[in-house]
Length: 171
Image 1: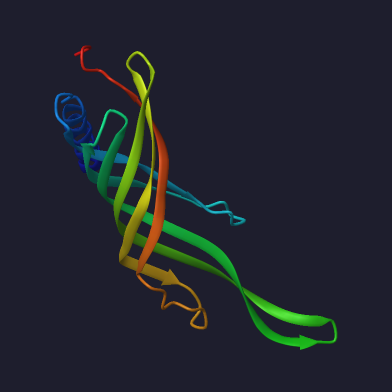
Image 2: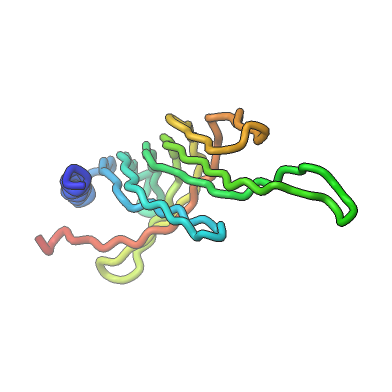
């Protein structure tokens, strides 16, 4: 845990420094955060992990920029699988299995950002773009009859909104 906290602190300071170079059209930074996977499952299991990444942003104009990120995070899916075991006088009979998937994923994202000033030093941005994702490790805790040969490479859409506060003159 000490290593994670030290790494997180270093990433915050590097990211702060990189984001306060306001004369450049090209910004480089790091990203760290908490990734929470909460299941809809009856037991309400929750897995919390650290997500880490690096990013580069290029300002096209005052309001538009292009950003690329490489991010590492963990994912978890928990579900119930119902196995048909037969039918009888009172209907079908099933055996229920608790299934779990745990994986580590590397994601490469490219987004177009619309940057807007909200009030004085407070600004925001809206972003959208594709993400290319690859599992670097996966662990299936499924019965043998449940499909496990899913593709480990998938494409997604990354969208979001940011609020930023410029601390350039404060420190």
